[in-house]
Image (cartoon, rainbow, N blue to C red):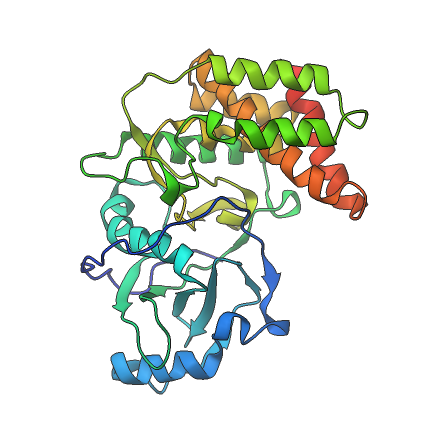
Length: 326
């Protein structure tokens, strides 16, 4: 199975950044059991398409099998998708993707979502939305990857190519990126609250040392492009190899340390070493990356430690491996 783009991306028109994004976690869900969430359903999508892009009005519309929380995504025919923010706070992410993906895509080694059209508020739906080309492939899972070490190198090559992309005019890290690309110090209070809540459940002494080291390793480099959420759910695999990267809603210009978190969340042992060797980065960047990984795992563990044992185990593993490297 190959990943391909459906048609050429149109030059997007600018839409003002009219809302802000609060820090949070992108939750994925089975959309077949949630059509209609946030007032968005297939019938609304059909009306929007018929009113604004009548050339596609006869194509079938159906929810995707696995959807995100920030946006609803629908298949439009067999070659396109429709992406709609679920609330005002998520509008800047879609607007940012619409503007920048056509500019970033040509310099990247794998496919990114091609923007085919940009929709406007209508039919009772209040936000801008977009039509994109369908990218074939499945989300990255160890069982779908032929050679994990080579996959890690491919991810590193994508990150480095993104960092080499022209940053001129790019959005500086901030609220729109959930502060990815900025200092992890933005989440200092939250991290310390999580540490207090988890006292006796994790090695909080070592965790504090890792967190303090991340804050001390202040970033002073030239801003570069970062994705902000390099995670298995945003990496598409076909024929066992990386073929596309999706969901640039947390992307921006700033410190690339946040893009290294996958070293602990997906990779281990040989694949982690392959990733480290291929992606490079200095010691300070890796210290901040450990901080980003620790913050997210502590936050997740705090929310599930007594209620979701499998999810808790995943986050405990990340915490343990981060602490082991400090």
